[in-house]
Length: 225
Image (tube, rainbow, N blue to C red; front, side):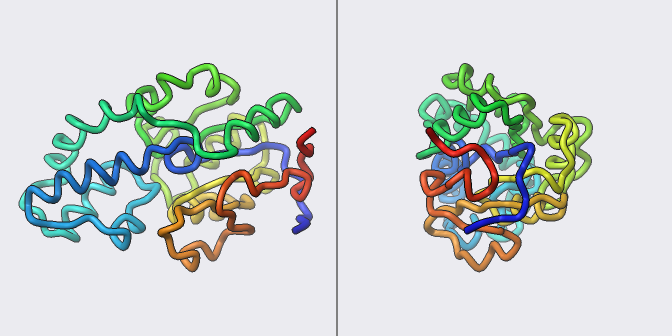
């Protein structure tokens, strides 16, 4: 496909888009809800993908009618989850693309709903790679008033890159993140998990199965050598 915009900046979600962390979230969430005789399925996961931790926790607690508060759920989760992050790896094609665009001087940012401490845990084995991004905006950034699907985090990332939202291309795996980037005025490419219903991404300009399918030249970006 050919697109009319030529992005001056590129912004990426992190969990499930750059890093394969979502499987750890699913694993730990299932482990917790099983204690209360409940099951964590993809219908529920689709509602929380991309959201801030406390918002996701509240949805889980309310939907499954757990006898704990959202904060108590997060306390249980945070005892287990960070230990898993040393195992997280880049998803196919993402490191190749981000390094390619970096070598061509294209400003890039990460816009993640993760809090800063969780972000640091996830990238602890990938610091050299993540150093190529001009800015990292986390969910607890003081300038981010509302989490995805509100556009705040993408607007902050664009501002720090020195770009206008309409000239930014965003990559997302979550419906809420896709909505957020679109609400910010950006073009957005969705790369959902294969279990996700593609109908949940009406705002996406393009839906891919993997970043390996992305062709930069179709978006006015430098082609791979």
